[in-house]
Amino acid sequence: MATIDKAALLRPRCPEQDVDLPGVGTVRVRGLTRAEVLDIGRRANDGENTEASALALAMVDPKLTEDEVRQWTEVATFGELEALNHVINKLSGIAGRADKEAYKSLRGES
Image (cartoon, rainbow, N blue to C red):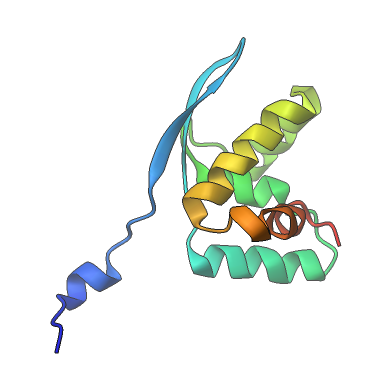
């Protein structure tokens, strides 16, 4: 039987990655936890636009609030945020075949 340290099992461990935003600089993001992804999915099902919530959770450096993310989406290109969402999906373990549906769920689309 395998043994595991319970503290290790319960310790946060979402991977992080630096992402270059051409013409802007480099940001650091982390993957979302399963609980965060499920919560975002539930809110999307209630018709909420959840992209700001997801990005605010994933942003490590600089740390942004949901309101700051909304301000950012007003001036950023679609491609800039799409590329960032792709990295976050990959780090969260929801990229690949489910990537399109996961992305739509993070954006609050059906």
